[in-house]
Image (cartoon, rainbow, N blue to C red):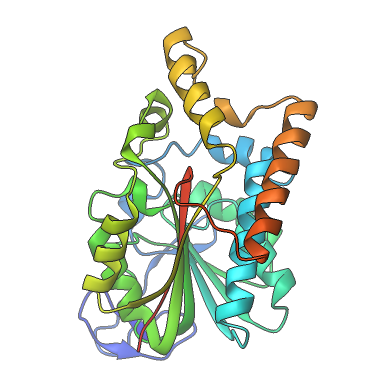
Length: 289
């Protein structure tokens, strides 16, 4: 169901025309825009990185490993997924993985920066995309699964975003979330990426439960590479190697292969029930009872 951000009414209309107040969102670059003032620039991310990310994601070990974990979590917890929303969909890399794993699902993506939407729509042309602020979503009880993948750490009002996810969720549905973990990993790289925080498992668990969800899975990943990650970030800061938000993603083919192999080994161990208490990132699955 659509939720009008002007008058608060709920309605069904494919054109996003509110039948109560008559409001229709403006169009920016071919997409309905619900927060047009933030469509081109704002805090949390630099839109000029989208093109570089679109080139890096499909071959970079970290994005590939994260997609594998996300799809695995969706298959285990939401095998009958019908309608999926990704908040902060970026260039559409995760959404393209969901489309491949669940070909019959109806897919939607929101992104606050319109530059990302053009790339995402080319990757997943069958999905519906709109420009929107994650703190104010134009949905009510619309989706059975909602994802936010490395999005919450960019937003000071992360609890407001989780509450919006709860509102947009159908009863019985759920969310899958990934975030960077451990405040002691904070480095110049986080500042360049415009992160507001790195999470502890306890903090994220508490915020999700406070919104009304029941957490059914919480786990660390990027665990086997954690010592190397700490060294890279610490000495990268000291030696000035962290030049921009995506500098640590630019790897040689050999490094990318080695790190990808390590992440594959970690995934296999997880499939065998071996989990780690710490890791560079967290994955959380929660359900709306």
